[in-house]
Amino acid sequence: VYAGISLGVGAAQELAQTRPGARGALLYEACLPISGELAVGPWPAALPAQIHGMDADPFFALEGDLDAAREIVAASPELVELFTYPGDRHLFTDASLPSYDAEATALVVERSLDLLHRIG
Image 1 (spheres, one colour):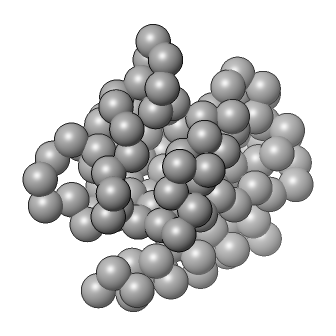
Image 2 (cartoon, one colour):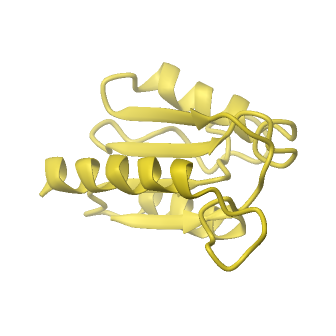
């Protein structure tokens, strides 16, 4: 399972989409498109994933990542889940930053663990 937060999502998503044997992807606060200029390629047919971000995060929601996430869900609705959280904070899962949101982070952790248990 590949996971990335913010800038780290690029590497995690590319590896999850292109490396044989990938079992899942956890993409936090960023997402690359599966079509167009910046696309890594199509979403793999059997790759479960979750994408998490705040619905008004200036980077995730307002710079195209949320749209990219929706594109992936539309292509693979049985495999990919998108979770948005109310707020405009970036890096809201980092407890060392002022942007930290404990309540949203608890949901992120719970949902991420659920995916990991399902793919075993």
